[in-house]
Image 1 (cartoon, rainbow, N blue to C red):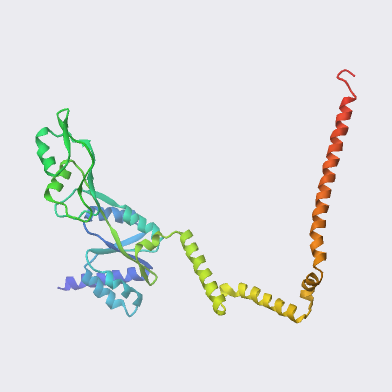
Image 2: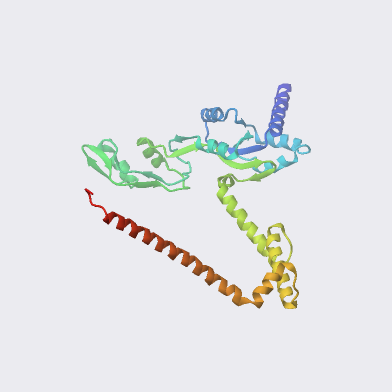
Length: 313
């Protein structure tokens, strides 16, 4: 009895140390994951993350005991159910997630197992003797005899996604050495610095984040301008709009101050500013024409010089 208590105390101490040392935790599902596969995952994550397994009741009891000192970890309690484990890390969450989900192994079909996706048998020569043709026919698999062996003539879906694999389908798949299932750790939930979220959040790219951020800033700016409530994103626009209003009041009241003297001059003498642009354009055009004429004269002079000398002069 004392040994059991000591093991529990040791486990509680280890869990608390991990919670204090690591800011991020993956709650992972471990259904159909073998001990050998778990060993491979531990090896890949070595020096980057720590995997901890344990009974759910013991983990929940331990976390409840830490809540007074580590209140944020209470958010993990709803996800500690079923066959789960924990991956603690301070590394990039996306990198660790990729390692976790990439480590999968193929597994043969078992009767009663639920297919995560459609299972197909592709057209092939099975190499089996014709005596087993009836077995394929019973499952609706089209075959023919080619060179004394059974050949499947077209692709066939033998099990639909989310349906159970029957005994006959499992026998056929195993007979063809087809392992349609892949098993590995699945990510149930992610904890990071007091926040809990699903793992697909980690798939959002930096470009998408920037796009959402810019869209949110634009929305805040529009609401701020419409309501007249000042916010940091709208300050620049509000200053410009207020200055436009100030100019409008100055023009209406005919109040002249140094910053608006040119504006009043433009309003009172529009012809002066209207003629300035064509003159400038004409000057530019004239200089261009002069340059072209000068180039033409130089070419003519060069041509005349050439005509003055023969090859043997």
